[in-house]
Image (cartoon, rainbow, N blue to C red; front, side, top):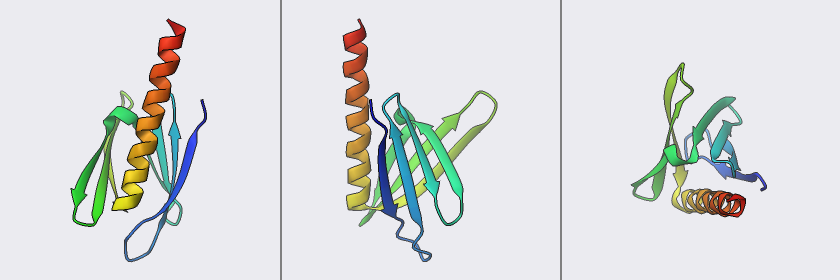
Length: 101
């Protein structure tokens, strides 16, 4: 199980950069490099909303103490790549769990 890492250019006025780590145990962490913002969510709490040539990635996180919702806009091809990486991580987790049984 390897953590997948991706880097995307955010299509905003600042042209910020997002560093994404997808953990096969079912978590995603996103760091916005320039603003030092950090987002976290379980993979099953991430959804994609199409908006023309861009896609809004929305995540929810509940650590039992605090609930949070975050969103990040990506170019369509970057969102597609992220979605594929998340699906791949989910598949890896299912295979691992199946092998353990």
